[in-house]
Image 1 (cartoon, rainbow, N blue to C red):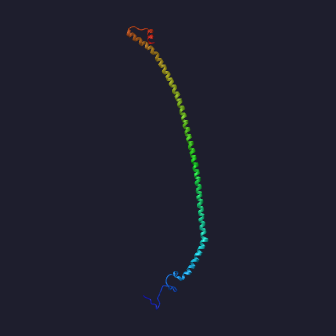
Image 2: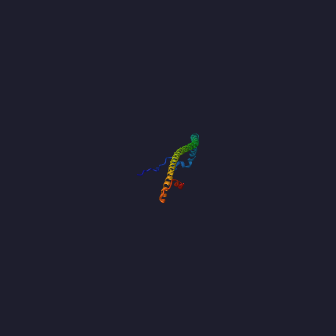
Image 3: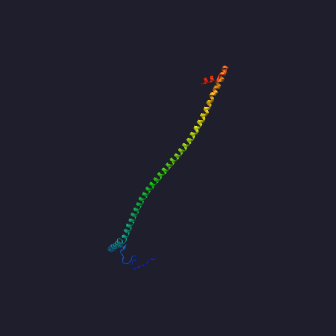
Length: 177
């Protein structure tokens, strides 16, 4: 269905904009657009430079100061920790030295006690050895006293067996001397 218009053509353009295209791209409107652009820029610049940017820079400065303070605290704590670590290492070394001294003292004491016990045992053994040697000497002396008698008897028996006569005690003593 076609609509007929007697002598006019229907268009979708608003009245007063017969040239077509976007009005902001038409050269005749640029002067007003530039003025508005400069006005809006000036207002935005003023609002940002006087209101928002000082707050942002203040927050940045506060943050920087906080970070610097935190770094200084961290360095201070690190230095304190290093001092405490050195003190702890010195305490450990001192405790180790004391423990080694205590161990050495205990070892020396044990060695002295062992030496004392050994000396006592050696004295007891020396006593027993002296008693045993005295007993052996007495037994040997007794055996030796019997040896002479046995030798005289044996020599007398041999002489009698060989010669057929018994030897006198004087002859046997001179022979064995």
